[in-house]
Image (cartoon, rainbow, N blue to C red; front, side, top):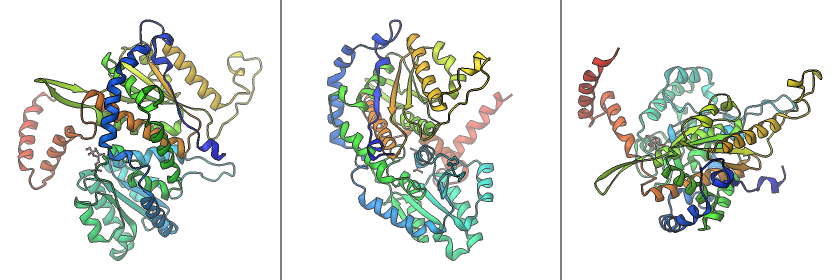
Length: 469
Ligand SMILES: O=P(O)(O)OC[C@H]1O[C@](O)(CO)[C@@H](O)[C@@H]1O
């Protein structure tokens, strides 16, 4: 890959959000955009003034990058497996980067071209999955990065307690500290206390960077660096997108244009945003986007005495797989969606389709093309079919999947989330709605200070159970 290729810019094609390209009376015209320019401008000033933490990550981490690489170089010889113990924003970015940049496939010499060390991110407390993982890893050659900004998340801390116990049994108490890294807040939380007590290497998540905006902080960078990803490339891509997006004019700012069109679509009842990459490598970016969009924009606010429940529901899909599963709904179901395609011009590898069966018309036309070509043609065909039914869709075009383009994509989606938060007049950076469920869990699990939640839970459970059939 030439360095020029690796630095190509991703593009946003929003043609099919506009009435002139859609059949029927659907979509927007340029006046709709012009009318909102002042609101975008106000939102831009606000974002620039407040500088949410994720905006600084591409520019202010030289020392962090050096520290990560130093630790990796010191530990890497002893490591076959790298396990991330985290959940939500402390896991999904790790998975997205890994699937995108270390697809597990064999190279031309039949060598496994997955990451080395191999990355595992359970992102859950499912006992079957975690037990099988621990049983199958050589723990003496495994590093665990325990990631929790709050340092209290029950799922993460439970996995850590189990892993610590198993590692101690395998390598002995005195060597436990060689197998753990802690990534957490620098100022508070139980994980920080544990890391200090145990002598684990520590990386810090800036206070103003929430989990879903943290993929380009040590949360995502440590596992990426250990697994051979060019983390400077990721950050450089994000920095390039940040520079492009300093432009206040929405016509020149892909994050603002994408965000504004989603906002306008939402105002017209498009309550669902489908993220549908036509690249298996990007399928977990769609998963990461789901948390970003849902947790940032799904908010309850009271305005002038009225309760408002805001937020577009993000749905992940995958081309071409979901053409054979979801597309029927997207074509003919409720007009409540914006479909976001991600198209990759040059796939990392391609496979030619051989020509056989000259006499069988329904099969022989495939010969001589390639899987990459088929995938991209299917994307364009789906895009056209949706547009012909007046279904709003747009395309993020990636020249190829590499650290630089992935960094751009992450940053663009994060910034547009911040913009839509401003346009909706909600706080895109908190998540108060997740606390109640957590507090019931703490209560029932016996955490001190949550006794009232246990009581409430037990009372409520009794009355609910009479409707169980
Ligand atoms: O990094 P932490 O504090 O363990 O949080 C994990 C995840 O849990 C949440 O707080 C939601 O419960 C997310 O916002 C976050 O990404």
